[in-house]
Amino acid sequence: NPGVLGSSPASGSSAGTAKVLSSLATFTCVCGMMGNGLVVWLLSCRGQRTPFCTYVLHLAVADFLFLLCTAVTLYLETPMLAYEVMERVRSFTYTASLSLLTAISSQRCLSVLFPIWYKCHQPQYLSAVVCALLWALSLLMSVVAALFCSEFWLGVESQCLTVDSVFSFLVMGIFTPVMVLSSVTLFVRVRRSSRQWGRRPTRLYVVVLASIVVFLLCALPLGISWFFLYWLDLPQEQKTLFRYVACLSSALSSSANPVIYFVVGSQGRRGLWEPLGAVLHRALREEPEGEGRETPSTGTNDLGA
Image (tube, rainbow, N blue to C red; front, side, top):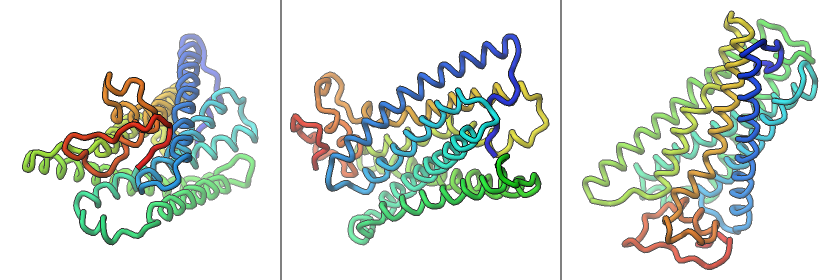
């Protein structure tokens, strides 16, 4: 049950701290929306996409919507129906982002553990189907939570506690452990292969691990505040400050992915004036760079093959 950021106004220094955190979170959200919007535009301009480009496109959409809802809820008064709707949409996009990252790490792990199956037997539209199912699951979870926990519906506290317990088990007991396990497996396997065969890890490997590490460090506090903090008997002032910190950290997490893509895909000074589409394509390549050769720039913003 998403908490109410402004349910009890803080006083003195706490109010000043909350205002600073709110301003920083708003600035981060605006920058993050610009970055994720750029990623969506670059990937949408390309006709045929790799499976991981499909995942990244959906992840960028989820992060963009999450940042938009976060920025809006920071300035809405409560209780209001509009605030409740935005909080539910924010919860929906947060769950979608978490599940998409889990799918990305799991599929990348499978591509390293079973490369022959991945290249020859993977269904063509697997990534698109998985993304659709994860969006549907996230929407279902949010609708159920809205029905049982909303102040504007006939929500019962005991039913809301049950719903929160089930969802916290899905998020903290399934999605997060699977993401961590697949990431650790991927890291160990790639490091071992690099030492044994002297091969450099692909840029996509770095992108996946960096995105997951940032999410675990920055975005999990928001999930903790949603699923656990609401039921703890803490002073309202402490809850409010923690929620602002969680908003800022989660905004940083959703804003960091475009930065990761372009930093990992860049070539330093050599690629300073390189088209952003080429940089993004290089970061999301599944194949190792052949004999140190890079994909040449085309002078356009198209991702290219």
